[in-house]
Image 1 (cartoon, chains in turn yellow, purple):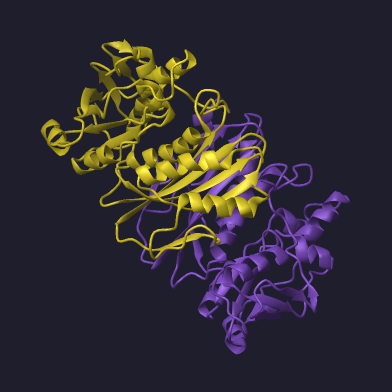
Image 2 (tube, rainbow over the protein chains, first blue to last red; image 1 turned 60 degrees about the vertical axis):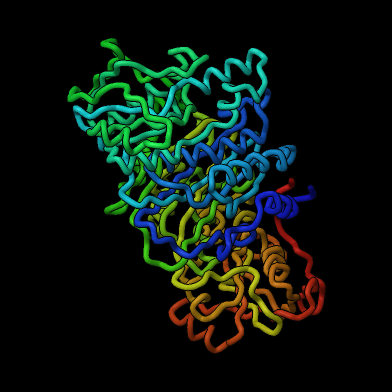
Length: 299
Length: 299
């Protein structure tokens, strides 16, 4: 490639045209007729080579996938559906853009979130920033709505990403079951929609780590929690399930068990893990204090 | 600051609360009741320390301002108004976030575009990515709508940013007139709205350089151009006006002179600079070939 503008033309071909009636890549902004959904969602998340993905273990295409997927997961965690995204890549001229965008395009297609614009610029290292819009038919599910006495649910077993990373470091292939969940995490959009519809009172996605993210939810809601159990993905350890992060399962709270299970008909049934308590600042797993294990960036 | 989450709490205080009735910083995504405007706009742009701003000459607060302003300018160039933005900062723990966010908050306030969410993560260097939503009451003005015979206009004299950078390198103060336009560019939102209302057929903002951006517009529209003159900001050179970039003036085309001038009543009157021609691929300034001077990132 000979420069930014040729690179953009090539990437636009990889990503395909904008949805009919919309303005996509190649103008100053993307544009679309406004939607009828009552709530509009907006989020941004960046993925950094060497921090969010070890390129000795996963591909640049996986990094691209992940940059889109983590944003889709943020929309899922509000009980919404993704609509469109835009991608900004800050990297060196040595970055294999075509490989990166293959993963971005695959995620956009499989996660139903077309890329309608973006930006390319020069930087040391590689930072892929994706911003996403979403829609919700009803009020979004915040982190702050849980009440004492409500059941805590998780949409699936935890620890797959951390276990997959461990297996990759030990020489496993990217296509193996747990490594593939590390390389290409699957956000839980259908489950987030179901949770909103069944009256979930609070919700968050497991990005930093289950314990850390549950603590975020509990603090935002002003409740404590008491866990009976933590569902561990086969092949993962309890430690990986509690603090590994990047599973992109959803954790939510809801008052009515029967409605939750009925509302998830046709999806993997959510797993009850414990209860919200009135004791704000207290979080326990089978009676033992559970600290906010997990990742935060060192600022 | 002791970590990402404390940092986010401090930054949220700098940025202030979300607009009434909306969900802002602190959840998985920002959320707002959907708007009635017929068109929704979406853009993303990143600003990189050392590439888009020399931190020996301007402040981190200026870098923050610029990251917001370049996005507002993208919305202006479509004939829209900014609505909300989200900010992702990838940097080292040594980055003075409070200074950076002072500039981001100032831009959000002065350019009427509240920051409703974001992300902080670790990277070498410093990359500030902003994504923005906007609204337009009518169809957005694209780069591709110009026709032969239409007048080309620019919303103000060019070269201020490049001249300001030159003066800063020679020891001028950030508060001096041209340096302040380099450090804190002013997107032309009111002018972009006026241009759309008077029937502008194509529009772009001057970010890469006037000649480069006019070439983008001409190529997208399949027209050539013949310029009579280029308005040069007092204190700048013709070279700075043609290729300096980052002026964030708008260049637009329109068929009817009288309507353009009437539609800009109360604003700085736009300056006619030449004509679109039927000779696609040909661009001239006073008869001389004008190459697509300006900046592109080396990919």
